Length: 128
Image (tube, rainbow, N blue to C red):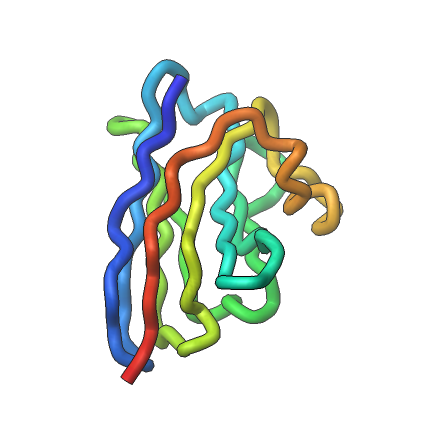
């Protein structure tokens, strides 16, 4: 089981990036995938989650309307389209997987310990 995250880079404020999380060894139709981010000196923060059932996708308030998560089941890849990027979006972004749907409660949904598999981080830098 492996997750491979990619797509990070450096952009100016207002720019866009699309992150990819490619899964291997399992299929996404039974797993929730969440994106987390960690800025220097800060705790890891959940950003978005998509998964089977239960009415997702979900986003934290600070990215609603700017980020969009989507799944290509054919290639078992989850994307995070990030638009209107801000300097405060600068962080190392990780994708993570857990069996079943995204938890309904946000605190549980973005608790890192609930996720079994993690990709390596991909760095997003937003700066002028």
